Image 1 (tube, one colour):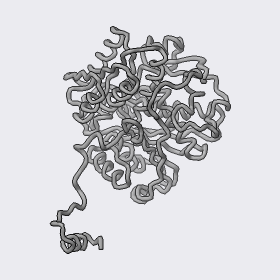
Image 2 (cartoon, rainbow, N blue to C red; image 1 turned 90 degrees about the vertical axis):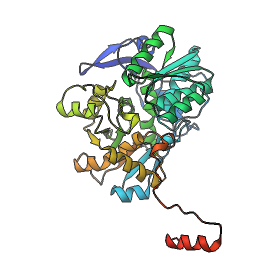
Image 3 (cartoon, rainbow, N blue to C red; image 1 turned 180 degrees about the horizontal axis):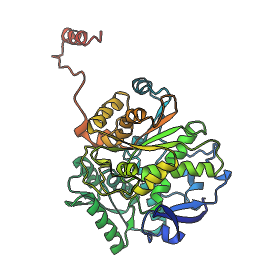
Image 4 (cartoon, helix red, strand yellow; image 1 turned 180 degrees about the vertical axis):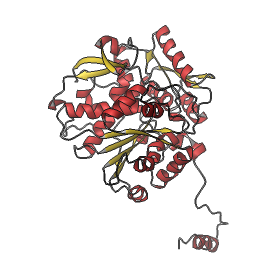
Length: 405
């Protein structure tokens, strides 16, 4: 197990120590980051037979009790797509495909660790606010674990995602005032009724779980670091968790330099990028983007994102909705079904190259965070579709028209 030696919260551009129990108990304003007694012994064991996030339990705040959480999470593929490499001009491009989990998003990692801790503590009800994917992940994870679940979502939440929550038996609270108010209501309700608060950006276990993406990337590249990792930015913890994971690998003695981190936001919702450019703190704004998963106008971890981007010598870029939709199509044609928010990082590659934040010769990992299957409105009917009457001759004629025979 990982021995937690301390906890800090990032405030006023500095690290403030907080109590470990307060951090784990949700009694801290902000998202605490846990520290461990780092050593080479904490690095992933190549002989481990586990292919889930639990193979990294030496860097997670868990004791040696058997794992109770019933769903398998983690070990998502790192894909070297010839088509994407050719189309992007990036010969060393890799796609970390997080759509392969129980609910097809990277949110499944945080849900797994939070609910594992909850099961050990004997909680009965879990809750969180979400633009969609966290709600689905928590609803399904809670159902599998025999727990009650209440999720708070904006009133305009994607209907398909809401139906998935309801199908899993969750109570869905739609908030007409939007995500930020849904988040505040979620926080208040958890405190008022003693529910387990899974909210990203306040529960430190969400960062701990998400950092396992970085640990997997390092292992999948033969215990080596990429040069650059590109990730979408909504509330921000996904990128912060990547930074933490790579930092901890270095602290444990992994050879090499942690990668530069590039965050991608939609042009219609880029409070973190604008703050980074102006060297200030993010200012809340009204989001306008088709990518609901990153449509967060007041990101909880915005300042932490800027800290981690700057520390890694990385950067932040913005992409248009047209770029995002085009990236969704390009990824699908390469066999990766990504929703718009999940496609944003791939869409950002061209901008990052143009702005010279990376070069075509570098080893680059792009993070795909959520599945197109949950956003059917963005599944286009472009391509070849034919209707035949059932005769062989009609079929041959149509196939010939498409130059398939």
